[in-house]
Length: 106
Image 1 (cartoon, rainbow, N blue to C red):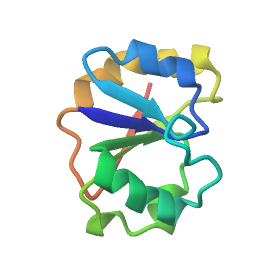
Image 2 (cartoon, rainbow, N blue to C red):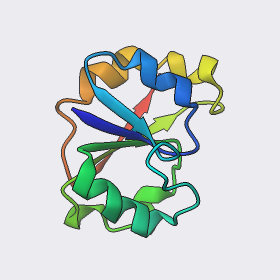
Image 3 (tube, rainbow, N blue to C red):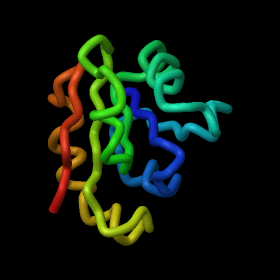
Image 4 (cartoon, rainbow, N blue to C red):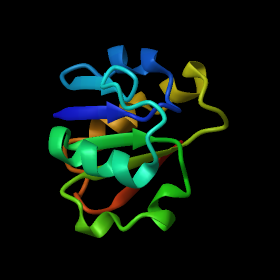
C-alpha cells in the first residue's frame, strides 16, 4: 500500500507503518500545497492519505477521488500521540474505503 503522510504528521511515523511504502508531503516536494490540489496530486501517486486535519472531509469532495483518507484523532501531532494509533492504522489501512474519510481514534 502506498501511503502519504500529510505535512502535519510527524515524519518519523513512516518508519512504524511497516509493510507499506510511506512518503511524506515534504519528501514529495508538495509542502505548502493547498488541500484540494494536494488531494489531486496524491490520488495519482498514492492509495491512502493520513492526516490530522479534521476539517478536510468537510472542505473537500472526497467521493470523487480514488483515494482513502485516514483522519487521526489525537491530542496533538507529536509522535508520542500518533504512535498510540499505529496498530489501528495498520489494521484499517488496507481496507479503508476509497472516496471517504475514515476516522482513527483511541
